[in-house]
Length: 414
Image 1: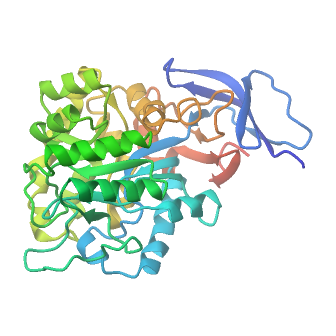
Image 2: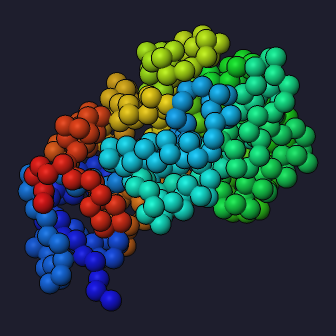
Image 3: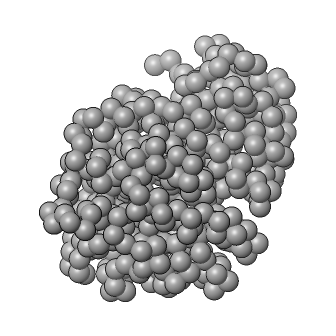
């Protein structure tokens, strides 16, 4: 069988760990990078692309997405046809890929079928590391019923809800095992209230300590981990002390949170762009009024939390958490983080740190021998200027995923 080969010549390869770009060629064979160096010889059948004057950047990783969230009104979407939700999901995934995100971690909604659709190239999109449905207690962040609704909506596995409601240690164990049965890469718990849910307070604690421990034990038994939705320092610190490996959002963390992150070698995934867009577009995108009122509680705090965590050497991954019509603003997270972080650290969050969180170090988020051939061809150096990646329509020339060119704007390379 003929090998599929791609040679990118004369580009400046971004070494994220070294925080520098070096002139090099990159040879990809059958989806894997086999050589990085100057003056490489291409196989006779290889496609050769000239990247002179351009930067070669590892494919980006967004560690907090909801690829099924075609509307910000998640409660209403829970009653939609699964086929309709899937059709919108395919468009959301394609948009992410064309913005340079070649891998994503879905933390509520995506399942094994969506991951398989991308893997089998039925849909264009980033490879999906999924957790299935997030687990929420009654009245928690993934309980999307209004106060007048009694029956649960979309609680069956096939229904397009981002979460499932569970109460008690036994129910948490059963639900955790059920998600892991489907191949989930992680278990997500709602550890505090949130913005998009109608009946909980942002500063509430959710799940008992024993319930959290049960999920952590089940995930650990399966060599997986628990990630937790949490805003306040109280919720974050409690989760970390109970064995949660990753915290989503964390807008209201304190110094004790930073100490616990470092002590437990845990990850933080801030999602700043979602609050900016919810503030601007939330009403038009379908965010219910009760949720709109919560946005201001977390909007200003997010940058301060990111700054605190970065100065404390917390492992920070890149996340966005956008919903509905706000999904196309995904890349603007780079611009927002640039207010408090150096460009090289932001790129690291979206590449090497994301790969660590996914347990795929050396495979994703790096341009090196043996890695998967996910490469962006970029006009500009994102190690020096994070806003280069904030405007993909201007600076992103080509996306290579698994050694195949999946987006080409026809400028500079090719």
